[in-house]
Length: 48
Image (cartoon, rainbow, N blue to C red; front, top):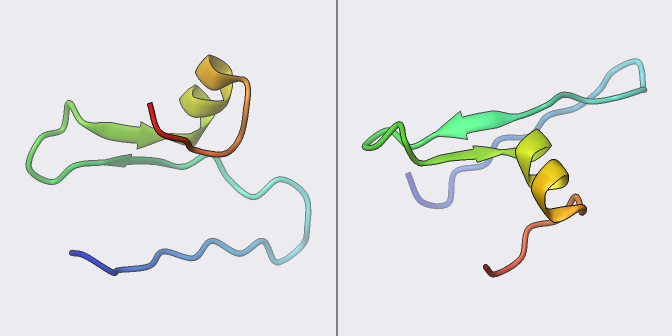
C-alpha cells in the first residue's frame, strides 16, 4: 500500500540487516539492498 513504512532498528548495534522485498503483483520485481550496493557501488538509490 502507498505510504506504508517499514522501520528496521538494531537494538545492540552493529550491522542492521540485508533487506530484500518483492512486489506482491509480480515477484520478478524486487528491491534488494545488497544487490543495489554491489551493482551501483553505493548504498543510496537513485534514478536509473
